[in-house]
Image (cartoon, rainbow, N blue to C red; front, side, top):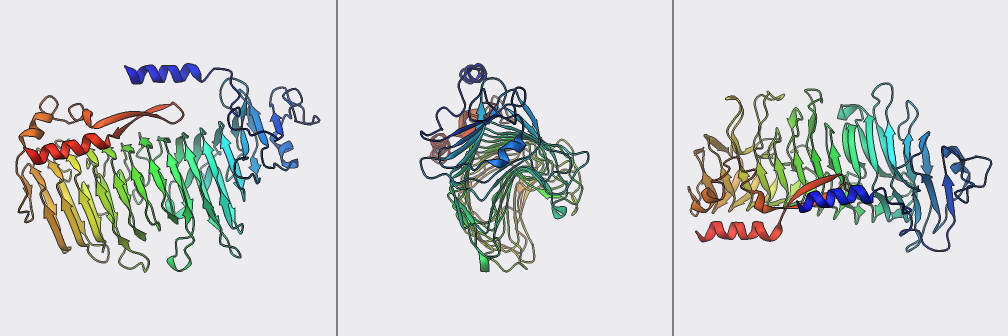
Length: 510
């Protein structure tokens, strides 16, 4: 009831007449206004009464520290918004909205690679806009908002906030360029260029093909220039068939309180995708997220620690109803980079994952925990995997599969996880080496169970927890908080840190 009240309140509050830039606009800057209904491109654009009419007029101004470019709400613009501006700390440039009503909408012309471009900027906030890029046919590399840092050096404190990006028809095929809601690009032939302090918060990304939020950055470890202080928080990604959030070339990225759901099964049979995962990154933390309904033909896990990554932490996340499992941890044995080292997967909850109803490109396969290739020093501890009965007899039912990607995993620790499986299941370690199992709960008929001197076959406490709802959805709801995300558009179920810690302590004490 409390969550419902908050949603109703936010819906009402969204119509209150408060200028969107009122809190963020610092003193001393110039406001520029654009009104698609009543504006005039012959005016000076410096007041609401002398607003410009078209986005093309904005190309003639240079935005400086403290300036704002504001589009009138309830307006629709056909064209491109291209911005390059340099604010300073405490006096950012703000691109946003004014007036009342729905967010101003920008629709790109046909065959446009982007609708909004933020290029080589510092201390800039882009907020409260609706962004559409629907062409007559799908086009590779099409995106809604592109943020580019090229031969610039360090771009500081770029913020994307409360954007509604939808209906971007890029390519469905990754190798052809794909497509996205938000594309973040850093590169430079003459000057290594990176983002420091980039944030994406409270955005909605809906019906964007192929991906939600994705980077194109420095991935080669011999020329690795990582983005720093990256935060992706409280975003809704919905009806997106491919990858949800994929940081590339980052150090210390934080991905938290994001929701991905209702992923359509429209990718071609050759395609792999998953929810949230880093590539060529160090020290990534993914926590308090929820991913469900992923239907990619290959992978389709909620979370992934991918290759060329070190010290990835996946914790306090909720994964459910995905064709793939909770998590993929992988490393290519032929790629000479950082490999996959030091991944930690802990305190996550998986309910009814690994339900793929059709064959992959390698046959029937949908492991709950999939470790592929020569990953090293992986820790999988205190995760709850609640596996429900198969809907079809041919569905794969492995709790753990450790298999080859030109090599096998080494030094993996599985500690105090709960594996609940009402039907016969299996653990497949194949030729992986130095696996340690310590104190796990094997609640069901699990073939291939490894040596685990402190392992348990039953739990009265867990049976009590799920007694009222064996599917786990309602009976395990006490493990979650509800968090409003996506600018008030959705409610996320986030694992409560303290509650899940108590849950595992109770499991040990019985």
